Image (cartoon, chains in turn green, yellow):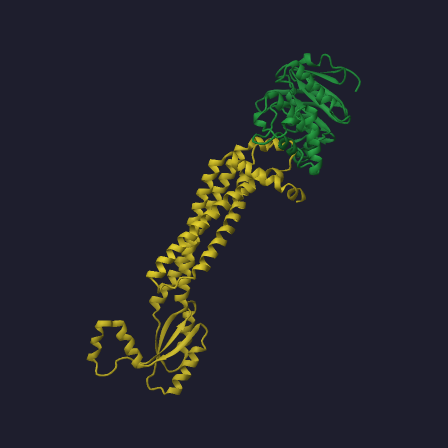
Length: 224
Length: 297
């Protein structure tokens, strides 16, 4: 469970990233955070990943307080998170399979399990034929899918995806959203940010969070 | 630890990838550390050889003990026995007046004719004692306590100079070895810092994925170790080549210089270079990593 109580985020230059935010996300829930650029979507993800810390208020992710003095604990918490970064953060000079396996190496999986997870994640994103390709040679859409495969292969408790549809046309974008939500384990919580509100208009399940100017407006779409 | 052993293949592969990503820069790093290690190898060889020579000379420092010429043979033998018993004295032998005369003839060469003007042998018999230079003061003190000793020619000026040469060689050697060691450490640390800097995105990604710090830094440690080890191997090869040539020249032309055995020196330098490069590689990498740990996420 993720719980935020009256959190504010003020950047060192004085900009307010978030203002008096409250929310509660249950285990297994799918959350879409939408809003225009600069509305605070990425700021929330940064807080959830422990890249930034709340200036005031309290934030707990799976029981872990996200505060500056808990750096080591937060680093450990990241082991149960499957992040999909806006810029993918794939390691250049390595193959697709190496990138996916690298995300699991320190999680305690056996070699056999890592290969199995990587293989099934690649099948899910439809890029099993690219397993031995260097990530340097992938298209933006393919890189996006590999980043998702890396997150899925880790069998995380929480998937955090920052603008995973940013570089895709509508059809591919919907496929990606479907991939993230349908391929997940029932107990996996998924948080997706997107500025393309039209993409989630047809979605029937999950929670939609509309953000604007660092404020939040929650809207439940359907049963989880 | 189990995780490290389990992932050793990956760490080595990653270190190879990191090296390949900046191949040219790393080749230059190996060359420069190799040359620095070569200088170190030459300094150590020089230090080793000169210390060996000085040690030999120190061990063979001689003093001449003159005694009352009226002493009978038994008393002279007793005197020799007493001198031999002094701590720091290695060898003692009696030199009679005739031998002393011949020695002087040898030393003077053509000028020895001047000795012919003497009707009688002007030289006195004496006892020659080989002593350890370090124990010289103690030996002289003890000699003065023995009866029937007239005087001692201790060549103190020469022996003191030898002593100071030995100290200077030790001091300079330590200084150069320390300086080269620190330079290598700084260069290795710099190489690792550069590696960390050019791979900062990869490091940040791994941190965001929750990788433990040990898992992230190990490939960089291995990179530093492999680069300095490469430098060490290069230096050892150059040193072996140079030492073999230098020995060929010196032993042929200056055979009286008591150099240490070539095989001992060469194998010692190889082992030393490898050990030093491994140690400095690990220390330099750790230092580089510690000073490069900024912008943690």
